[in-house]
Image (spheres, rainbow, N blue to C red):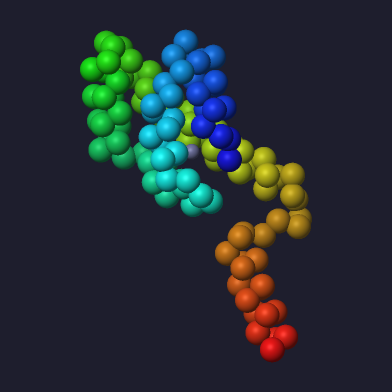
Length: 108
Ligand SMILES: [Zn+2]
């Protein structure tokens, strides 16, 4: 998962704005399942982001919504690359955990 700092750096490079508050808000819930929150395209979040940033500066609402999507895409791009690099050995985490539990039971 790209860290908040790299999202901020990329926003700065793309738009001239670092949008630190935006990226910190998106990744507020840390951990391996952090994408269950604020990483899904919803009208509610689009409106919230747009209004918050538009109040700060006219025109920034649209930029912030675009950068929110860039953040989500970057996160998933990162996962895609990990899966591609792993090739055949890769399995979904859920399956690996199930197998681990099964083999632990057998040992008992
Ligand atoms: Zn994220």
